[in-house]
Image (tube, rainbow, N blue to C red; front, side, top):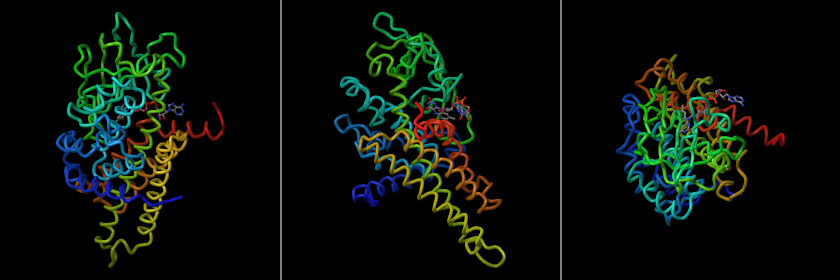
Length: 383
Ligand SMILES: Cc1cc2nc3c(=O)[nH]c(=O)nc-3n(C[C@H](O)[C@H](O)[C@H](O)COP(=O)(O)OP(=O)(O)OC[C@H]3O[C@@H](n4cnc5c(N)ncnc54)[C@H](O)[C@@H]3O)c2cc1C
């Protein structure tokens, strides 16, 4: 067992950190305030490899290992939760299904432009107005194969990146009969006739990440836009979400780290009752708890990433990492606000924004309740 990052991973961390400190973090407050996507920074991420983390080199990606991918997302999370969410979803949810399940022709057609971000990011559309956790029951968007084309009708809700994406991997019901083989993933190009992307949702946090409802009205896409075989959709989705959950765990570690750094800086400067706050035991305990929990969460994230990289089962470990890291980030941000007192509640300081960003992480890509369900089923051996 080796707990040390390799030299290459250290260098990668430094590179991504410097980029984030220069291009992403300084704009985080402004982007949140304006509810605006940081397009300029994201454009620069393609050449750096940040938009093709798991994409093989032969298709223009960075093809880095899963721990390095977690390192990158943690740094982005440290810099700005909204931008990090968009990049995490692009890599983990939009590129991953094509890299994992696409044919050679599909990979050649879609991955290079996604990895470079030359035509925008990617999205994954699973959730519908009627349900997000229960995909098998909730997905009502229908795709029917007619004369070599899928004709798609339905609606989706809460789709990250839709307005800045070139394509949306869409979970559709291809067999009206139901059952576990009723759903399929189909790649829908943005700009397809009948695909309506509604105005961005007004959100509590991650406001630099655009989120949209979608309507599909007789959207026609060629038959070969299906990923894998008809009926593979739910299995593909679950596999993709395992990877996505490691990424959200990493993002949450970055958010917590950022909030803790602010709290530590403030506690050293602010004086109360004749001494810095950092001398107060109650404050020290909150900082000690933050340091402990951040470290524990990062190790859980790395462990899940390591299993993924080794191509070993990692569903339970991904859920454990996401559950712990995201709930940890909420606790750390809550305490960071407490340490800053009234200033913590002010938009003048970043901790209230980071707290709002962190709140999403226990909901997106499977709520904490769903993570507990996944973990419990595996611990108890329930099918
Ligand atoms: C900012 C943002 C970005 C998002 N991006 C995307 C995206 O890019 N693509 C996408 O497809 N979706 C996206 N989502 C949707 C997100 O994945 C869903 O909101 C989430 O999965 C929960 O689904 P739901 O909102 O339908 O809640 P529901 O499934 O209706 O759940 C409501 C509550 O019931 C609980 N619950 C449900 N089932 C159970 C159960 N069996 N046991 C115990 N408790 C249960 C849930 O934990 C939750 O507390 C995004 C959401 C947000 C807010």
